[in-house]
Image (cartoon, rainbow, N blue to C red; front, side, top):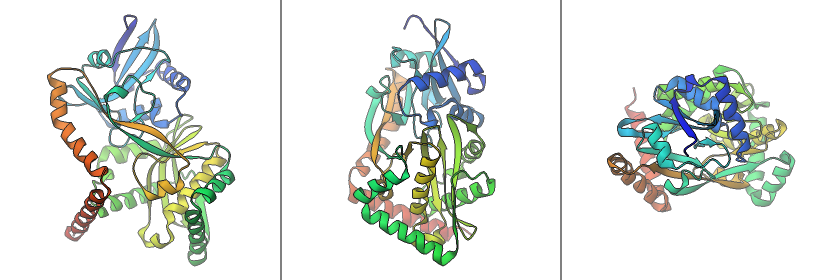
Length: 364
């Protein structure tokens, strides 16, 4: 640790030397090429979040690591893009050894919170409180091979979804799928559907937060090999019926915001969309779709395996860490208690749905 110097900067202060080194270090990590871990995502968040910071680790005059985060009160910080980022952690030179407490001290932090820490982040894993599966779809050997897997693992799901796709085409008009739609109007349609879904299910509307909606729009315009916004749209007779916005690298499509027009719900357009996304991704040379953490029947039907992600916090002993624990740990434990009990989780979901219904009634 004695030969490592740490400088904290804003994302906008990173130069080409640093971002090139970031990409090179990430490529050498051996981890899946998740676009959330590329500098473009941190740079985009930095444009909409004034609290965004990056600790740059220098070793023998060369960039040896990058630790992106967002500052908060009392020395508490969160992963960059916390609340929407699906893969989190530091990008370090293989073999670099640094104690998490020393890293936090250099950043002036007492705690760093994460909810999608990627596997292999040994510096932070000791602070994890829970571990979750993040379902993935392997299309590395082509879409036909993936369909064969589905016929074996989820035959009813595949047969039913394909039948609904044919019925949708017959009853509404010609179907058209666009893997990488650049029309901003289609993105606005997706965001509108997703906002309505959040409200309908009693959840906080992420797109009502200006920084998230602006971030998504800017990422839609981002075109970099390691991190590009990808909007996929299923059209029926020229009308969008389902859409998804995510981020891609050369080999990974990180699934992010899926939604569909409720008018077409009986056709399960979201499921049809995901099959076409898998097909389009395979054709584009992508080997894996990361469906993201979170329990859902459609993920269980689509997945071919899982990655592991962690939730928790890395802390530095002291009053600041104690304050963090008192503020966050009871809430986290309550969420964990509900998640681990399906009946209770179902009751909670029904309550959220009723709240969403009441909100709609109260909306003029």
